[in-house]
Length: 398
Ligand SMILES: *[C@@H]1O[C@H](CO)[C@@H](O)[C@H](O)[C@H]1NC(C)=O
Ligand SMILES: *[C@@H]1O[C@H](CO)[C@@H](O)[C@H](O)[C@H]1NC(C)=O
Ligand SMILES: *[C@@H]1O[C@H](CO)[C@@H](O)[C@H](O)[C@H]1NC(C)=O
Ligand SMILES: [Cu+2]
Image (cartoon, rainbow, N blue to C red; front, side, top):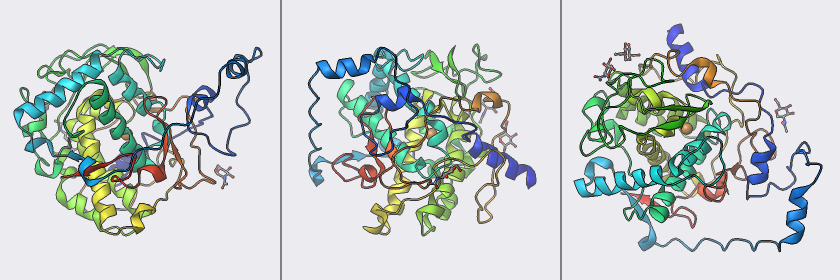
């Protein structure tokens, strides 16, 4: 039991922070102002080129407010297994299109649009996991991915489909999601690629030849394949009993750690490999199906008590130190993936210039907390994403 607890806290605290400091370049890039919170430590270059550019150019007009979300405009997010083969193909082709589009934002070591979406998960990972912003951050990240598929790759379908994981819990290896023909390819049965340790590269499906430049962990610039290590036992933690355990929580403070532990780890560890990398896992496109399912759980929970749960947000802003005790469960067994072999533990230490949270008055996550999308889409506050039927997001689960 002690062993299991240590592992769970590792799997959660893989995200833990040690010695973060403000990344000034990253904050300057943020289009959302943080009133009164601009860190005094941002270095001003001697030649002050930023100031000079600002003086020459007229101030940019504020972006127009998002249009009202009406019932007819809501994008309908459906479960993957309910799609026709044509719908599945359209989604996968749009993902391949993101992989083929060049990167333009200057995010380190990114070569394409898909990696830019991965990068905005990797860079701030220490302030988006093990903290109150975990669910709102991933909600906006799913939306950024959806917007890119639709607006840049001609995807017409209603957005990131979700993986109805309780249906496949305990037998992920048989899931439609991992189908080699109509899905994302199967287990990593091939030889390990360079920099992947012992994890096998995926051999079939549309993503078998993808080369990813981000990860393991916070490492960058080490090209590798998508590797997987499907573990059906670990996938049991995506089962309905684990979801129900979270749905019964009555406050966000109890709800988010519940979701972040069993159902979250069930999907990441059930697929394994790249997906088990808490920092760089968006390098496996199944990440978006998994986190869209977690977002549905978040919304289903909010919908149990509206309007109160449009504003129920809390939690710490910085994760607990590694080795801290995991959140208390209610006795459901945990089937934790074997950690330590992959990703290498030293790749999970955040770099010293990792961003710090901003937008909150203190150390607790609030509605004014800023979710920084680093230029992939405009940044937003947690308040902006609490209602999936609000003007910014405008989608529903069907
Ligand atoms: C996935 O592949 C690995 C070997 O690469 C194997 O050890 C593991 O059992 C496989 N998973 C399943 C569910 O078959
Ligand atoms: C799958 O995970 C379980 C639970 O951690 C572990 O006991 C088992 O050895 C793993 N299976 C493989 C093939 O690694
Ligand atoms: C936030 O936490 C830091 C580090 O624990 C502490 O130094 C600081 O005083 C706290 N700030 C507030 C407003 O509580
Ligand atoms: Cu994440």
